[in-house]
Length: 72
Image (cartoon, rainbow, N blue to C red):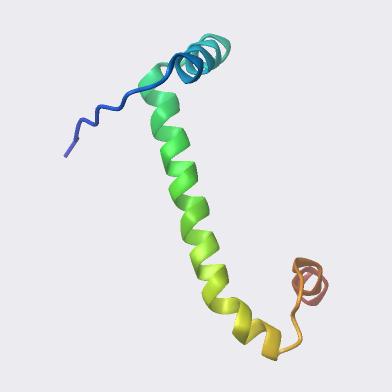
């Protein structure tokens, strides 16, 4: 199922969006969907990370580099 969403853009954001659309050869809707999907993914990741950090810290993982070293 597809749902329509209407948003208001200020002039600066509309100009940025129009330039990005022209450069990418894509529609406003395409770029807006991609940006929304990306932001929601980032928000989900940040929330999961916030929940896991205390547990990771207990295991000695304090930074991203700690995790990278352990699993690479």
